[in-house]
Length: 305
Image (cartoon, rainbow, N blue to C red; front, side):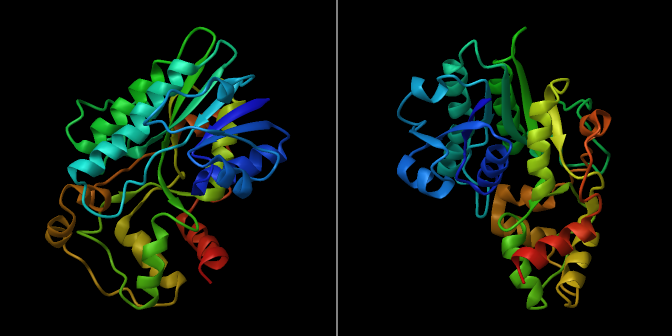
């Protein structure tokens, strides 16, 4: 199958490309720097130049393509969400999605678009799955994710399915652990806020397996939560990480200090997302890491030793 992957040079994109190539798929990727993308991803990948801000998706990127993984999007953190940063975050997700949907051919049967657990309200510890009522978007994060998914849903038809892959907090060589592990090794680890907020973690290896599972299981459509099976309170997650790096777990950063430092972006660490992968479970997905402790141990051993 010929598959188009956007965001292919990112942390998750590189892993997905490697996995899809191993499965024997023919891959096309887009990049503002196709020479660099080809050098990073290998000669087996065809890289097409595309700057979503300045041009439509080139027709050559879609030639012969049957499935699309749309993973591109500027990083949410760290730092404050300034007006300019919000524009970049929205454009890299929503504008790019709209331009891809406009370029889809009848040959494309599967449009698999990244989304995030930030679409769920972060003000409750109650569990949420794909059938939960979301209410009206009332924050930057919920509006961003809602508009992102709406743009992706516009691709659905009787001959094409779309999936909004609601990705949790990824445990891997980059992402949330990159700034935390050095701090915890200095003995500076501790929960943020009251520590009761739920963390919907997912190991990067499981996440790539989920990407591939969604492609092959066409009964999955619409929103699908790509998270581990057991979200945990941040205080528990934090204590486990301290134990994994063999350091004490003493410091707590109060919520008001985080809000003062990050402003609106403090929602990234203070919101509670008790999100569960109901659709994946029902479809028979088998988790390699079903608990957070072995997932953390694996990532720290492999990438932070």
